[in-house]
Amino acid sequence: MIVPTPRAAMLALVAAPAALALGVAAPGSWALAVLWVLGVALLVLVDGMLASGLRGPITVTAPAAVPVGADVTLRPEMAGAPSLDFAAEVSEPLIRRTGFAYRAARRGTARIERVWARARGPLGLGAWQRSHPADIAVRVTPDIAGVRETAMRQRFNGPQFGQRMRLEAGEGQEFQALTGFQPGMARRTIDWKASARHLSLLAREYRTERDNPIVLAVDAGRVMAEPVGGVPRIDRAVSAALLAAFVALKSGDRARLFAFDSKPRVDSGSVSGPRAFARLHAHAAEIDYGAEETNFTLGLTLLDQRLDRRSLIVLFTEFSDPTAAELMLAAAGRLLRRHRLLFVLFHDEELATFAEARPTNADDVTRANVAHTLLRERRIVVERLKRQGIDVIEAAAGDAPLALVERYLQMRERP
View 1 (cartoon, one colour):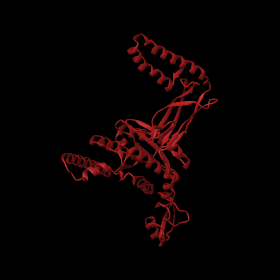
View 2 (cartoon, helix red, strand yellow; view 1 turned 135 degrees about the vertical axis):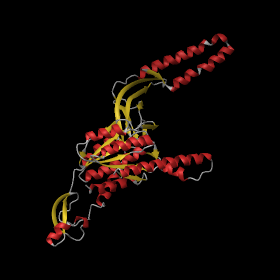
View 3 (tube, one colour; view 1 turned 120 degrees about the vertical axis):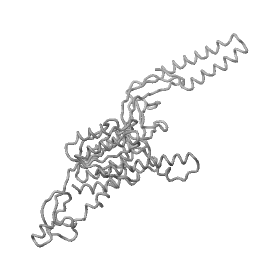
View 4 (cartoon, one colour; view 1 turned 90 degrees about the horizontal axis):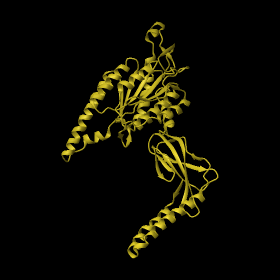
């Protein structure tokens, strides 16, 4: 199609004041302004026809995946037509900055739906324009810069290394053999009955357990989209989950990423081996910012049905009212019959600030009372979780990932 350029539009606008002036000076000559507009339109048509020639396909070069917060530059082009104007229809989470420079504002999948190409005529009044469907997906994945370094440092500096000095160091609960107790071994490995029979200290040696399943379940409901420390809770949960998954895969265990709100949204399935981390990373990009309330009963029940063996389930969640907390407690109690549970909660820094702030007016007093009530209800729920036998990590947003890895390595040693 042929479209006018800004230059043609400016020339056409000149007709308005000209028509007004002619109407005042010579009432019968206002038609000249109409002829002026028609002449500009004719020039636009001719100029656009001279610019026609966009016959080749329009291609767009875009990265398949970028980390959140990164800058993205799209490169549209058409073979045989180097000097063209392009435009593109790009959905969130890519936010346009200038031209074809975008910024990955949040996780998710951005789509380039359609691309326009425009060639201007020699007069600069008309342009020949055509569009082409693109349907290109750009995945905005969690930023894992530093995850591998942090995970490996935590893995090799963790408590499972260097604690027992034996020829075949083994971690786990599966008994392998009795051996003489040596300095450096943990005292809990001593078999006192066997030592009494043989009149010498004997220690139990265990076979290293591998292939333990860990499920990283992320609550993707409305409450998790709220920020803590300036970053949405769900982003912090995904980063911590990927860090724990990397350590688990490096340790020889199986990892699974599961996300749900009103229903299950993402399920990576169980994967093993360090190379499978890329698969979990790709699935993490599909966890969207939900606007619906979390259905703990449905989500956790379906997760339980999909697990065929006892697993460690790490649940990243948040609760905003007593009713949601009651449903969460009931669903967690059912899971606890078959699996081990670990809840990860982030300290609500904003609520703590409101509760501790010195009031200066009536609004501050009301705000502080509400914050105290919410924090008290939160502590009650956390205490009830612990009494059920569920492990809970409640840490600051920046400290939660490493706290999770340390707790996972400790729980890995326990039956």
